[in-house]
Length: 324
Image (cartoon, rainbow, N blue to C red; front, top):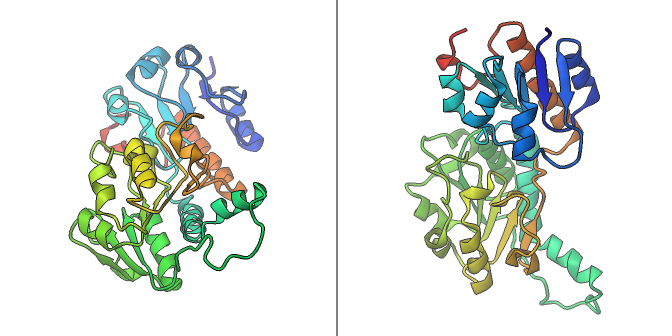
């Protein structure tokens, strides 16, 4: 029997053709993600899972697939939706797509910083509601980028690339990270998260979602920010306590937020943030360019094809724990 591959969302057809040439490939093409029950049924007997952030690939899913499962390839850099420890226990390789979306995501994060600074989304809504009646010299005032301070939480590839853009735009850049990492980007390491929050006009999040970073920005942290400050999140939704953020925006503890990720995703249609003008909400599109998403698809397929040939994926996050 040929190996079986499950692709959990629609993907680029040329990349699916590469999989079809090597395996019996099933692509779940409907718009919405598979339900838990549908996923548990669809994985039975597969050798590989082409996974997406909308899929929770835990031990139960791996066991439903059975002993045939050799690789879980994530369409993305972050793989917090995959229980990598459970995969290692079962000798299943986990692959991801590092590096490919760094510049695209940094572009997007800095675009959000600029858009939030000048209240672009809010101003667009103002015009669409028919409220633009005349020029008002004191209406919809924003913040200058040049000369302001940007605080970066997480100075990996993406955070460093955001720092490059910020420095080029005349911003002072400070960062909080486990290790010194930003000196070559013109950024200054600060000693604590609180110090970064207190000094920054803009705070942008670029840390992975881990048990340590879940809820990293909560009520106490938001109180440490300046009242005119802006919070940007293009990392993972649960890094921010959404209810605390809602309260902080409503009470004027911070001025603005721009979120490409929320907790949960999608944000519920009755959430209070949707009624606020001082927040920009976007549907997790930081890497959404044709070139970047196509390259991500190609790398995910590369990871699967390598495993089908008996080799570890070229981008394997648990390579040290796999014995093939």
